[in-house]
Amino acid sequence: MDKMLRDKKAIIIFITPAFLLFTFILFIPICQSVYYSFCEYKGLTAPQFIGLTNYRNMLKDKSLGFALKNSLFFLIFSCVSQLIMGLFLAALLTNINKGRNLFKNIIYLPCVLSSTALGLLWMFIFSPKLGINQLLAQFGIEGPLWLMDTSGFIILPMWIIAFVALWQYVGQSMMLYMAQISGISKSLYEASYIDGCNKFKSFIHITLPLIRPMVATAMSLNAIGSLKFFDLIYNMTEGGPNHRTEVLATHLYTQGFKYNKYGYASAIGVILIVLCLLVTGLINRFVKTENYEM
Amino acid sequence: MKSNRVGSGIIKAIIYLFLILVSVIYIVPLVWVFMVSFKTNAEIFTSPFALPESFYLDNFTFAWTAGKLGIATLNSFIVCAVTLIISMVIGSMAAFAIGRLRWKLAKPCMTYFLIGMMIPVHCVMIPLFTRFARMGLSNSLVGLMIPYVTFSLPVTIFIMTGFFESMPNELIESACIDGASIYKTFFSIALPLSRTGLFVTGLMTFVANWNELLLAMVFISDDTKKTLPVSLSKFVGPYNTNYSQMFAAIIIAIIPTVVVYCIFSNQIVDGLTAGAVKG
Picture: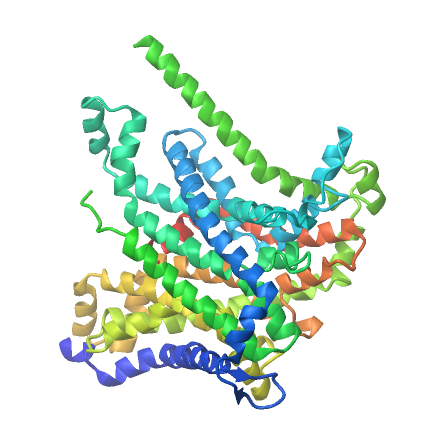
């Protein structure tokens, strides 16, 4: 028995395909990407080492500034809003019996739909002549150009995109919190009611501390998801007007595959990886706690 | 006591009202697109919110053929199905080696795979693209499947390892006593017993790859090889002026998922959540 499980040949056969794929498709390309970020590389000629020039160019790149600002806005907004809305919806849904599944399934639906299609859908809803503006026109109001407004620090289109993203992905957070809340033993709540807690108090003092590990998980998922964020923006505004709704991912795509600046795009990619690792590290350090016995 | 009950009744009513409002925000956009997709282009502007006058199906046929959404659906299906099968086989093999077989490097190996969960696709796209172009793999569905499989592996391995680890030892032992080889044990005992895990990971893989846009857009330029999100994104662009056709295209792209979701919604929601809880 033990001998069979220690069979070297079997271990190698089982692990090799995954290991090779991982190494060649993920690990080596990451290393290459880091190397390219120090190179002048346009795809036609071999990469040429130019040191930190790409990173220095970033300081001058105005659209990268927008992209970085928007990505960070997006990161913070989605972490906070998903936490609040997800918890709120989860708390509501665990308090009702009739129709819980129906509401849950409706709210979760956009999570499985293609964000390309949904992005286009919302693009039409907020387009100048259709959707909301048609509705406003019925009341004689001329609606604004939702996705083309450029005033303010965080411009209107960014807020719209952020809310659409919240609309699409809040189901995911909600489900994670619901799964955790339904795992909490009923006797804890009963004890708290006997001690004179009302529902709100027991939510604050029992539910919240007990779901903290899940908050860390859901937040890391949101954080990485929001840094990767590409589909909705590409389809709703394509980074426009005038690069004002660019995020890191769309900027990487335009620089790399529209202008063939592979070296520069790789440098953006490196920043993206660093941000991802940093944010997950921070969340795990400050939000995560040990699992309580439940 | 009675006033208390009335109070909680009011609270319940408020909760339901709020949830219904939320559901409306979720459903109305989808219904609106669905209705508009049956209208003619002129009708959209003359009577935007009325029911369509007649069910005008030309929009759909146009999007399906001229928009190349038909072939794109087929491509997407091929890519996702192949990716699903390969990543499940390779992933659960690796998970079995990590979770069940005994060797020193199992833990470090797991960590190595888990790092993949944190890496965004964007960062490896450029090296992959240039290498695949040299190898003649760009602009082919195979070239798309390889990275898809790779990026599906971390989740698959993570979830399946959990399943194999929690499997009772006696099962493996008895198979061993009956003279089954390790390969036979894996394929006819361990795999069938972790069907739930396979379902969960398969679902996650399929949904993720079915909706993936960026890699597909970069790797494939040939119209007949594009996947559904790419063709859709191209068809519904700023250069198209026929709105109702574009709406029909959106409907074509989401209707298969919506139908499948409506039938299996509980399993899908629970499966995906189980996957994410563990992930």
